[in-house]
Length: 127
Image (cartoon, rainbow, N blue to C red; front, side, top):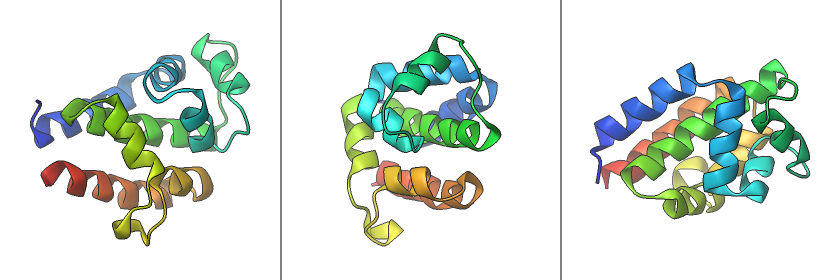
């Protein structure tokens, strides 16, 4: 298992360096279509699949959500596995007022959701 610091640093670097197509592909492959789509505020994954093929680019807000979803999921998956990342994203979290991180990423502006969701992921990794 990777250390918390390594998992977080790797996830951060990847979320900054990767193109939207690569992040969308990773999310679809590791989180599944439904979780990935919900995290971006989409009703289905068709647009996300287009992004993963390099067809079109997400809007600035949607790209910010994709980068946040990817960063947090990679962080948790890097320390544990993709199944744990899915469970973390979907489950109500007491550090977020019993809101699921996925809902916060989808509903709040990315710059507001990021500090809260990243802190909740850190807390999980530090246990």
